[in-house]
Amino acid sequence: MGRLDRAARAMPNAIQGCLGESAVTAAFDEMRDGARAAQSYATIAEWLRDTPLPRLRDKGAEAELLFRRLGITFAVYGEGGDPERLIPFDIIPRVIAASEWQALSEGLEQRVRALNAFLGDVYGEQRILKAGIIPSALVLENEGYQPMMAGFTPPSGIYTHISGIDMVRTGADAFFVLEDNCRTPSGVSYMLENREAMLRLFPALCAKHRLARIDRYPEHLLATLKSVAPERAGPDPVVVLLTPGSYNSAYYEHCFLADEMGIEVVEGADLFVDDADVVFMRTTQGPKRVDVVYRRIDDDFLDPEVFRKDSLVGVPGIMRAYKAGNVALANAPGAGIADDKAIYPYVPAMVKFYLDEDAKLANVPTYLCEREADRAEVLANLDKLVVKLAKGSGGYGMMIGPHADDETRAEFARRIREKPADYIAQPTLALSTVPCVGGDAIGPRHVDLRPFVLFGRDGVTMVPGGLTRVALREGSLVVNSSQGGGTKDTWVLEE
Image: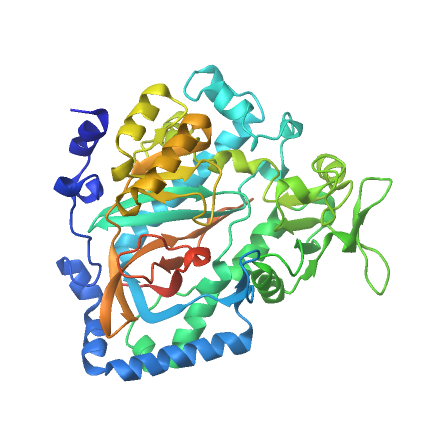
């Protein structure tokens, strides 16, 4: 019996997923499986029974028209055609019970606190590395680790001001973290706009449920950002959102969030750093001092004095201002080391090390291909595993073994042998399904969930739910919008 098979036997049935034909379990249907699901979805089920499919399709088309009028798009460049795309929106909401969200939110707060403690440690005393819990080379030789952050503590010791934690569900009480996003997580604008669309299109249906509010997210985000401003900023710090510009895939979201918070959205050329290492914004009334920068720009392009010298979208000198204590950056540069997929397997150990608690949210079993034993197991089971780039995102550079052909699996085997440190592998989970309007009937589609967790001087805040991403192609497990996935409104029911 191979190690993969032993791991599968050790896992709960809910997480065994698709490790092979003999181990395939039916996907958990969130609307139909279990008494709690039936209760949460009772009104939705009645609505679907009473509403003809053509009517649902018409409402879907109405939602698409609404999103087009609002300009709710994302950009995909380099694939030909119109790069500005509308993320498909499915009108059947996903429902999460209050008790389920309570358990999730407690686990999310714990996880984000541990990730933040890890960042403070690896840029400080490095206790977890000295203890041998995480291999030093995995952190210190990782391109996500930024040596210039060593010895520097951000305001309030917070690195992960905004985190997006990707969750999957495989059973009634089986939720797992698929990956952490601690750099510049996106998608919250779609969470907010999806709710607005449902309230407009189906006011009566919404009124039949006690929906937990999510509309205060921009307010919470602004309060979080202001809370970490330098002390000299006073009671009303100046906050700006730094965008790479209109060609960025999340540019709509940048503008949306800035507008909702009542702050300026700026590009690199709109900011400058003076000789005293203070950041200013160019305005028609003259320079205006900036206290907090919510950056939606990657480390590499943030400051050409420190990172990529050819960056045209960053702000020269902003790292000098940051380390001088004259401006706060959210998220902190170097936070990406915490969400590297090769670091992910160690997060439960971080929770134990820093918080002295057992992790409330489980990880998906993960194989690091740079380890010889793991690599051998992965190469022997490519038809049963999902292989991912350790530093990949957006569904790119990924292979779902059970759905791949022999040629694709052979190509990934070659890549793994050539650059094993670049890849991880995980079991192919039987992700839960929710009903969607598609084809000639309403049918089940696989989903994940990205809750957004805010961490400021006053602690952790999150709105109930998050962005539900859905694989709109029947049988597909890929939910990323760049790979053809869509979104749903996520309803957390208040008791």
